[in-house]
Image (cartoon, rainbow, N blue to C red; front, top):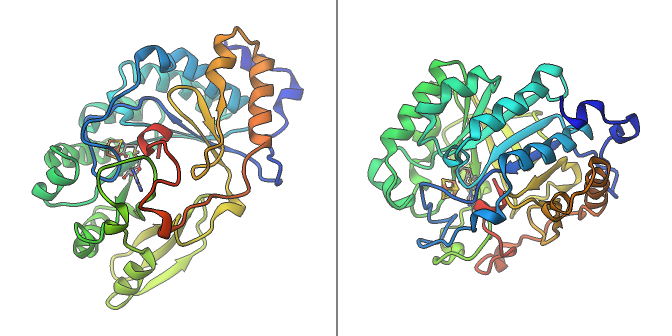
Length: 342
Ligand code: SAM
Ligand code: SF4
């Protein structure tokens, strides 16, 4: 039993921000490290955080548990690459207790898939039902280029393993004008044929990288127009409280999501906050707002103090983000996606 199993009832009123939005979804980045170096995500030579700055698995569990006590019912582990974090399964197993108790509706993971072949079975055994796998291309050479050295075969083996143990797999693909734009219909068709939903993502101006991101920016409105020239796309009212809008593709029978942070405003219904692996809480992906929960817990704070710090941070959740493509050559936010978590 953790302290939160016995949290007093006043701590259990929901987390509501200053604009009346209820926060029910937490993304937790468990590491800033990764075995790949995707060109739009990381610089080729990244300097990673010293270990002492990264929360221990127990600290991550403590903060996540406080959010669950406050009504967060969906939790996604991300990174960096979550499956490179040593001991991750211990955290997954600990959090899965909240699935069993009913406090948590869903525990998911976002991964590049390179280690999924090894982890699919233990994840499923711990109660994970769904994983998001990032995959931008089915061409081994292009995959190697985009990830700076990755092996596509490992990801495909990971997908097979995940589906073999009954995990639902959703694919995320970043739409890149020069690299994979022409391949997207084939990627979508392939994914739908193996019962995977696909979500397309526009590149976001997060963190300094070598390339000028406006070069690779591809509007998903343009992608949708192109797809509609040969497919029938029907809007479906599926909403996750996030920036994705979904359609059904009549010809493939699968679902396709569009995440358009630059060209579409999705902030009114935002239900999510993000915890970095250093314990910084970001209540908006596109703003510099930050609350240091690591300082709170490492100062010996009580659970009530931690809950108060979380409430204060959520109360200040910004109304909306400030991404604009004309400014996207410069990062709108200095931290990388791998720091904040996708
Ligand atoms: N390593 C895991 C993975 O790749 O799925 C989880 C973390 S990764 C940062 C989460 C998602 O963010 C991936 O789907 C990745 O493609 C996406 N991403 C990273 N940098 C991005 C950027 N600058 N713009 C848009 N999406 C980005
Ligand atoms: Fe690693 Fe994911 Fe970033 Fe690619 S997108 S470098 S896999 S964290």
